[in-house]
Image (cartoon, rainbow, N blue to C red; front, side, top):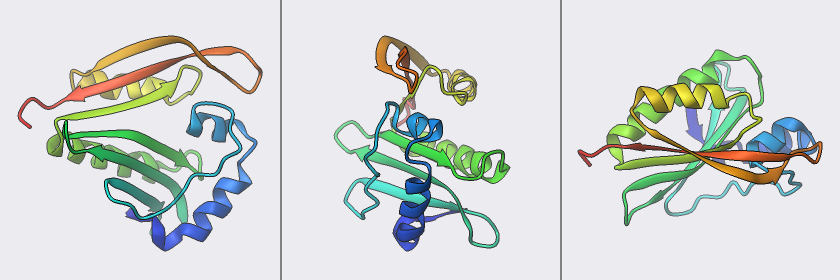
Length: 157
């Protein structure tokens, strides 16, 4: 279930801090980073804690809305409980809702992130577009990595 992240801010910061120097955090940021995300309430930014039935925080999901072009973009997603299907299910339904609400969804992923295959399938299912950018960042091993940008358009909006 998605709930406002501000309710769980301290728990989220603790969970992000616990994975700060890991590959999971690299995949979340898209580059090696030691800067924690800001979990603040601000206009046009939507931050959610993903929680299970017992109200345990198992993930984080965020995005921004650019009203001029009616675009949801600048997505962030991480699971703190790898393999828990609740994360994927909750995000799938939220993305379907966002596709109906906005003219465009736009997000990016580094090429060595295992979730890329799911993003490819999701984007293709909605007749979206995938753009490859070459040698965008370095992974934790220091290797140059490509980045991929996804777009899904809703021409009814």
